[in-house]
Length: 596
Image (cartoon, rainbow, N blue to C red):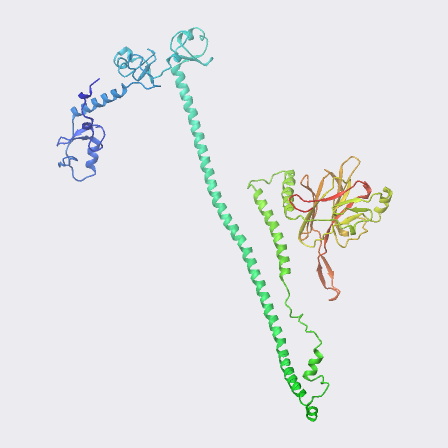
């Protein structure tokens, strides 16, 4: 190894342009050395050809000379430096040279024939001797024993496909003589080719999935843009009703102001003649006070007006009208707050429900082709969402009105439970009563607009009737139908223990017995619906009901009608044909409400 004193200074071997070790050094006519690419590139960017160091100028066709001696010195220096870097002590974990005795240098190659690792110095014979050049050299490895057959102490040269293991030549001649074995080099090429094919497939999959990721990100980006646009459009859509409400508010205020101005003008028109009459009366009164102060009999009698005052005189008119109270009913200001508040409350309630249904519909929508869903799924999800919204927004507090109860029915003190009276007549009596009237009771609360909902626990009854009825319903009805003003469903338990229901056409059908029944009424739409609260399914629904009545006017004459909105009351009853003394209906609070 060359000593440090024999090596030139490293700074002398650096190009002054790139400041790195010379590559293909050339000399200018002035004797300075540069990398060939550096000096040609330096001159190509300038019109003036000169030396970067001494600034000596040259002709444009100046030929650069290769300084062979300087080039060899640079190459020698690079070789010595690389060799010096290679001949460094091995660090912990690095493969060491097997030939070095004292200072173990880092191994540069491992010979699979010699089964040894060599540093750069001891590797030199393998690079020089002809026979050693044929040895197979690989990157340094420390586990050579794993490459040697433990039985024959020979290198593994073959791979047995049947046993999937590495074998040596002796193993191939003995235990694996009938097995399919190939040289390691062939197995290496095949596995490498197979791995390359798999890698290509993995790369294709990687590119495909990367493309999918790009599509997803692009979709998210487009979806975000679409959502932003939709939100802006929705904001604009919601702005129109707000503007309409504000416009209606301003119009109402303007109407009230105009009515107020008209009332003020009417009052002023009435007050003006009264003020004139007051002035005339004041003048007459002063004259009479002055006359009363005189003591001259002749003058008093001569000046005294005719008594009593004639009805056509000012005082006569005033005295005749003094006992009549002034009538301001035709110009009095009417209060519109109650009317406006009622209308706004009703509109807000309807709008709130519709908006909640809209939000729920948008939330449950998945933007997929879901038109082929089964009927069972539709019957489950749709009533569930609708029932939830009804329970949250339309629940009302309902109590039984004992005044309307049939004589055989008993209402609890809190108005929440309905039973038969203890000691009621025999079953034959109920069959007889069935042909006369139906035992029922109405709810105390009545509703003539909007929506309302209540729930009744029916699990303790074997035969019940639930629904709504007009307040004018005959207390002695013997049938339950819309024609008599009752919209209801009934249920009884047959001999097989099945729950039988009656629909609007009178047809009976069997379904699961409910524990709690929810009754929902939409007065404006003419809808009455019954829900099995536990199963959260629709039992039956009346649609297109006519609650509003048109009554002929008796005041304005025949042929003229006005609209009447009769109240609907909750309707409760028992089926007498399945009399059971333990029958009970109980109005229960709706989940999420504070009604008791």
